[in-house]
Length: 260
View 1 (cartoon, rainbow, N blue to C red):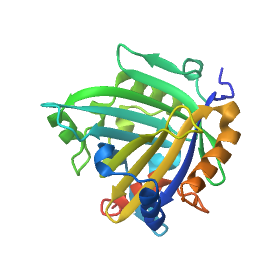
View 2 (view 1 turned 135 degrees about the vertical axis):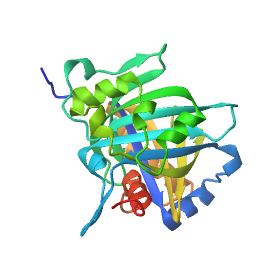
View 3 (view 1 turned 30 degrees about the vertical axis):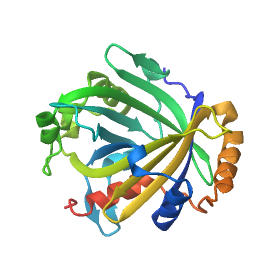
View 4 (view 1 turned 180 degrees about the vertical axis):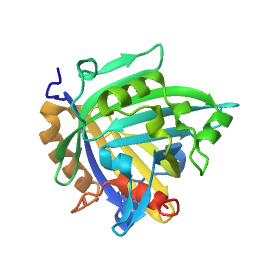
């Protein structure tokens, strides 16, 4: 039986792009050397049409994201692979609650995404698996031609894609790697918030995005939206008048030269 899902946690986000992102970075006194630097890759099967670039998997609500630490750890790199469903589709019973397997280093969670200035709640589900994989395997998955993404997917990823979206291994053969995105992530302690505020910068080609976010309970979400907006103003950062989906904008930019 498929039931209507609800989340207990929400991620409150305010995103900046272009000049606004640069100005917010300066106002928040962010220094590149103080943040955690990572490289991010996505996968989709981009197509070019009269209406521009289409991203079939993202448009279906499925995204694949690989994050790799830029620090050198020898022959293996610390990384995580995430499959995200947004908006979250109806899920079968075994996926209707948050799950965590510490032995196999993966976590599945259902939460609300709320992006300013509208802060419209969108239910999402994501499964993140931490891993240490040989560089050769990663390079194979990142080939400009259709890479072997399946090698980077953990068994729970495959089960989630099958159970929630009806996607099997053969359905992923047309995926192409999109990247890299250069990311820097900071955490700052602001008096109003516990835990700390997360700030992440993405740069790709001539695009720059900065996202300020905090995770809270759904019960506290509406209050936190106002507090986060005011906290930015107190730091001489004017929240943007419109919210842009940074993942979609970045994927379209990355896909432009690959789409047939």
